[in-house]
Amino acid sequence: QVQLVESGGELVQAGGSLRLSCAGSGRTFSRFAMGWFRQAPGKEREFVAGIGWRGRTYYQDSVKGRFTISRDDAKNTVYLQMNSLKPEDTAVYLCAQGRLWATGDTEPNEYYYWGQGTQVTVSS
View 1 (spheres, rainbow, N blue to C red):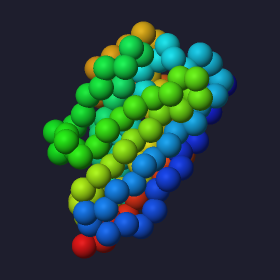
View 2 (view 1 turned 45 degrees about the vertical axis):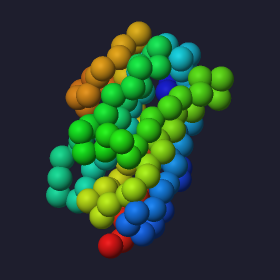
View 3 (view 1 turned 90 degrees about the vertical axis):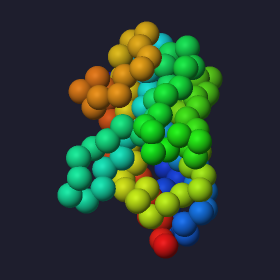
């Protein structure tokens, strides 16, 4: 059984930075695509960033140049470095594990396991 646990979310001022972590367990981490999504109150869950099993990264347009996703397969952990944060980045951020040998997946239904989420709040 796959378990994903996020950490690192907190209240930060606009322009600040945060690094989110997602620790995984349960199956060979390195073979799977990993992604970060976010969900704000009253809004649908949206893709933020993804990293394929070979390390190729891809991002939602609104976070390109500000956010960086990375993975450490030896630690079964994926990270999301968030810089130049804006109030519109406020949301619950969720880590997800996707398909085997995949890369480029951006739809929630392409991801099979989810963490509980960590709250990121950006004040203006």
